[in-house]
Length: 151
Image (tube, rainbow, N blue to C red; front, side, top):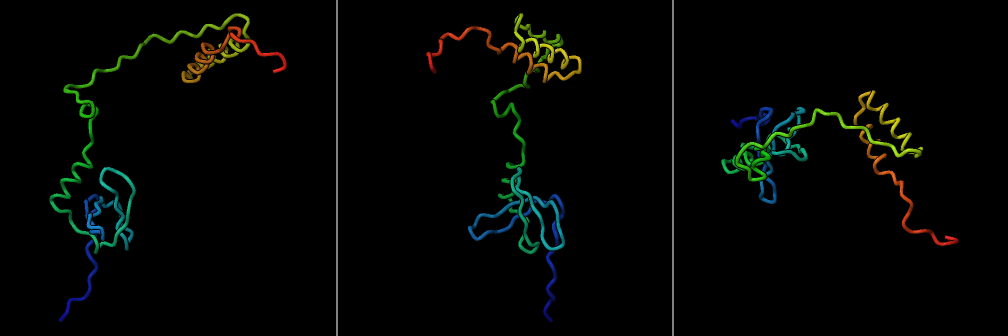
């Protein structure tokens, strides 16, 4: 007596599975969800997700498992740079950044300096830095060339 068609077992969440493709290269993925009909998978190491019918999936071969390990192993910064020891720590200054000095008589610098002081009082250090940059970069010299008449 023939066996009735039974649905293929659904792989466990988090398991890596493979699906054969017509091109001959298997498609690899980590099971992220099952909606009752399709299994949802995520590519090893990230990337776009894909779906498959449970019957189309199989366990990865040893070679495919090795590829999955390579794709999912994070690369440390030391390995990328060829360093042999730990990275030296970054030391941040505890001294506050001095306020920018406005050019006397410049309305733009005076307004930016006032906004910078307000930003520092309200602990908005990003805005305060923006106003310091504006004050330091604001042109105060006469242009080196003069425009032509009628231009």
